[in-house]
Length: 409
Ligand code: PLP
Image (cartoon, rainbow, N blue to C red; front, top):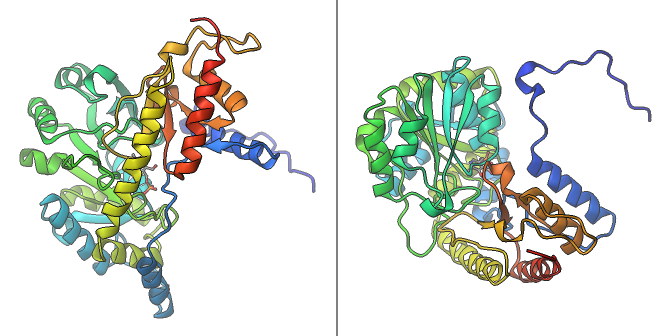
């Protein structure tokens, strides 16, 4: 079959400067190598390797059989909204009315809806780095300007009030917080959030988007904290976002949700009404069951992730040249490769950046990881440990072996 040659194609300015996400490119390249028969371990994916719980699948099948196959109310069925409200009350001590919560096609669509509904061209969104790569591109697509604020490892990869103040301009509309964080696994305690809230008191026009997607993947008994709860004074300008993708291993079902002031929720519904009309009716039934059903599995899965975290972080820290801070949540390790920069591979190729090091690991160790540059902070690399312990043991051994073969430094 011949491919059609596009004539005169021109991408819109809003996406012309954007490539396909580098994480996806690494994943595609790794998948192609795997298909070609290479024995590759891919630690790039951002999804749990567990299955969606059985009772959630049953609820979806029942909904389908009982005719829940039509459009639903715009931003969530009454049942899902009730489950979201109960979840916020149970887990976060936050009370919302139905017109203060919204459901969308994944957490990603919540971000799109919020930024589409609020950003005028040139409006700025503060994004502490390292950050989930999609944030910057979503802001750009919505006509905003991502303002990246680097957060050093020495500060636990957490935004400090002074750095926040320094980054604010008259165009700042939002501060985007993500805790526990993809990619660093770092998290904010209530007192950290209160420090940021105190700084925000001087900037009443700035709203906070709290991405709590990894709320339930938090280790060592660290209590979860979110801005609207830590600082009730900011509730009137905070959107608290969450979803079922990571907590309940439901990435493919595509349900995210949020709670916030009704004026914002209403504006987000207008955006959604002209994009997807509503999230999938069947997925909404599944998400309702996930939020309302037994929650014990969260602790079981957390324990399993914590074991994998320890394995990976301790393994990486034993490799001369690497340094990996202990993450408190999510399923990512964010390690520094500063110590190997300037070394050379066995064939003389210099390692000049985290990108070079990750390319070296892909080619020499047959392990795919993602350079910190993709997340706005170098020289680091992200390891997703949402895979089996056996594979992680092998991956760490390969990384150690390949890094040991680097010369110089
Ligand atoms: N927020 C963070 C920090 C994420 O890592 C992800 C997914 O990787 C999302 C939001 C989006 O999740 P969803 O699958 O619900 O769109």
